[in-house]
Length: 284
Image (cartoon, rainbow, N blue to C red):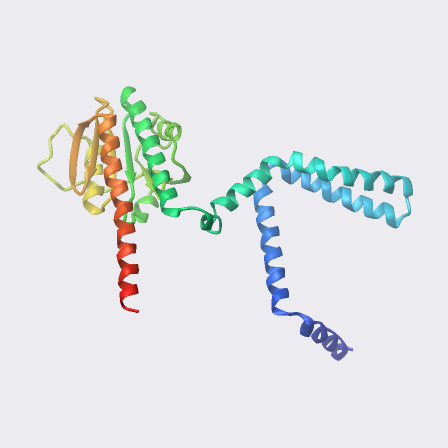
């Protein structure tokens, strides 16, 4: 009996081709992404209702409840158009995610897109700094560059959200859970807030400088990150880079400094890749 079962299974396994395995994997992945997309949304409840409707339709056919079966089948046919309307936000989000994926980047200029994201990030940061400075709200924003500061990120609360002026301002509002510490930005995303930074060991600093300025200098001495400080007492803006602190900046000079530093970083990487490709081409 068992031998017959094994023989039966092996007969079907031999019929499976490599392309069938690929086909099943693709379908499985699409279903997984679909479930992940609608999870914890109103679409999840609607999908449950559709599953119940399909089961009831099948049961009515098996039990030969012709009237109910006729109504349900016609409802299902019309329901396809209704689904497109009901699931419009989820479908749009799915298509947008496909466009942002690596596959979607085949049809776009990745470097140009990256530069645009950096420009947008700088706009949001400077907008937030302007608001924080006007209201004399202390802030410390760190933008990671080549040197990874994952150990610093792990000391704070993970956010992993897009950079927006509104979120940055809300984080530093006094007496809120995340206001005390630094915000870390990595790859155009706010990775964490309320992070602890190493303080500078420089003993020659002015006594006017508080903990935020010392922390900004500390992270700039230990990495190539850019640290932006807004003074709580005066509302003045400062920037720390490579162990140097530049104080009393305007929003416009801050924007210029960020553009020069962060855009130069992107252009430098592009030049390195170009040189590497040229070197490989010469050595073929």
